[in-house]
Length: 329
Image (cartoon, rainbow, N blue to C red; front, side, top):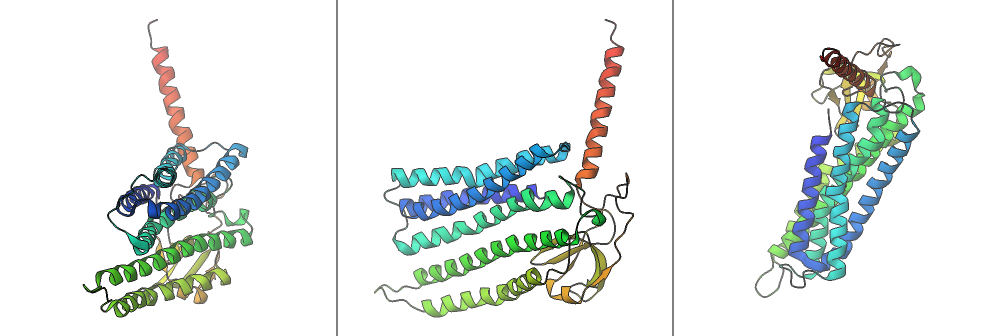
């Protein structure tokens, strides 16, 4: 799957929510929001710089697909994190909105919490693109489907990296949503004489519902991280969420579960993380991408994309030569 369309949506959501929060809450929320954006921007830029340094040191040329998508990701980081960060610092320094629509510390905290959700998701997606997917798809070396060319500890380490940053992003989102709803209920249930009406009960119910949903997911992600017995590119059999038997190569790791690909160009089947302890390892398919062969098991595998890019450029060059040779001049 190509992640950049989702990343573009995340960048747009981040920019819109930050702009709306600044307009509604004014300069009072600018400083904490600027700090949050600065941390996220530095993380994304740092991983991006590390990625570009590795590209510079690598002798392999990027495919046309990777070049195009790298430009999209850079634009998303710029539009969703860097520009909002600079704008927020300017709002804070210039005190651009002295009379905002919303006042008080509750409005400030609620505004920052609302922005934290798209910012965390966007930052996590940039980590996906710059750190995880280059390893999975073989940007700097063999793709993970060629398990014999990767140490087992590395295949499992990247599975841990993948679950770790997604786990952190979900934790930030759940905490932010729970606190935001609690603050919103408290503000909406204040009587005319200033006494809170049902606010504690509604806040507790909302927070409890979110915690009840999030805790099992975060717990299973935590356990998967520390068990770490399943690596990317390895083959396993287990049970899906509906208890049906599934088997395939591990191509994705998320809080929802691990994605098992049974055959090339298929949609991965999800095995919940809670079922990973009972998963059974299978012999890896040594024929996958063996030698010069590529069975297209991984979507946008760089090994395959480079070959396609070379073929495309070769056809273009050949067409140019034919045209030039047929020129009467």
